[in-house]
Length: 140
Image (cartoon, rainbow, N blue to C red; front, top):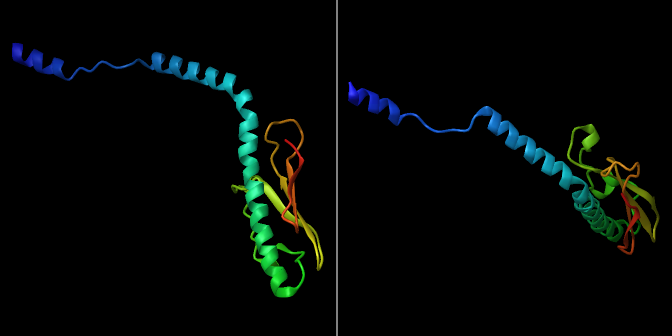
């Protein structure tokens, strides 16, 4: 009888109670909320890399198009640029890319944020031109 009692004790494990786990999660959540406002500028800056990358890619496509057709294109489709599905449409892209103007010697393209990253009511806007000058017009 004593052997049976010892064998059942072998399978008892010490563990945390549900209350202890919930308290730990609440503390982690509070710490995250305290840290979030100081991290927002870094999050916004990281997301703006998407606009910069997409506009740099568009610039290369425009250069190839100009070498072939002796002018810049006014349409994304004609240069082979495919707009990724926006976050507002269930996709992953935060910026809407557009060509604002284009002719034989110059072009201007714009990336407009579709999400207000820091909740201040301003949407981030970047532009690039035929000289590959990348500028942030509106900070978010």
